[in-house]
Amino acid sequence: MDWVVVVDDDVMNLKMAGRILSRSNMRVTALKSGAALLEYLQTNRPDLILLDIKMPGLDGFATMELLKDLMGEHDPVPVIFLTADDNQESESRGLKLGAMDFIRKPFVPEVLVLRVRHTIDLVRLQKDLSAEVDLKSRENESLTMHVVQTLAEAIDAKDTYTNGHSSRVAEYSREIAKRYGYSRKNQDEIYMMGLLHDVGKIGVPDAVINKPGKLTDEEFLLIKKHPDLGHKILKRITEMPKLSVGARWHHERYDGRGYPDGLAGQDILEEARIIAVADAYDAMTSHRSYRDILPQSVVRNEIEKGKGAQFDPVFADIMLQIIDEDKEYRLHEK
Image (cartoon, rainbow, N blue to C red; front, side):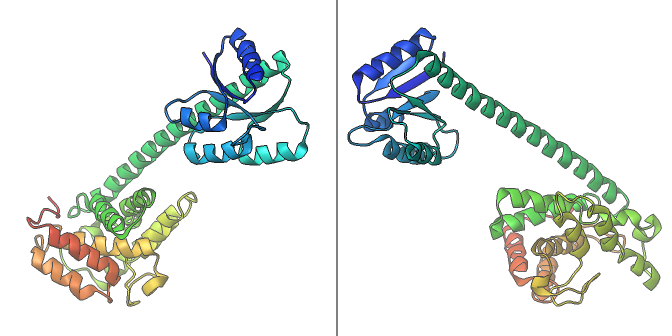
């Protein structure tokens, strides 16, 4: 049963509105002032408010202003103003305040019922559509993340010695971003950038990636192409343009001696500067064909030495903080 609150200082108007709406199988609550409405809404949530404009004390407009503060922007109760005047200025002011409609007094029963039902049905439809959009968005985000994680696993599978590398870089990047103050949405974005930062390795021969010994200059040049290859792969995803530049710039250095573009300092995308620290940390804390996981003290020293040279000092300091908190040295390849 739809629930309508009618607010009017005229008892006859309250009785008439109550009688008309009740006959149409609606629950009606009658209140005689704006102050009474504000108090009532502290513990009640009707489907619609019919609010008279001209009332002693708080008029309808002042009550509406306070209603907006009370209910906020999230899921407010719809309001229809009641008025005995044919005043365009009042209508304009009411609509600007957020009223859904106006109903003239004295009431025409059929018009009152139709306007009330139409407004309640419209708001309910909007809520249903919004909920459906949110559900589909979450489903799409879940599917997208699953696809990205599968792709990241395929990238890592090319390298015998970096099992889970992309996932760990994504986790470390998200933690650095979180501590730096990123919103949850931006943390999720950098996590996805971390997962795909090495996507360009798809285009590098397996024999080069998995070579146990030292790379020749020619082989190293092939490795150095993976940021550009990753950029070309991801730049088509226009919904997340940072994916491509994150893949392209994660090997840039803060001092400008990185690749592929030789960018320096703040010219490097902030997320790429974060991923660069996370990537280097995981490289040192993972098994390689020519060495085991480095001791934590050595890793810490290398991050410290890289501040202002290889790494943005701000993000290097956050990584050092994470290292210092990892007393039992759990953050490494298992």
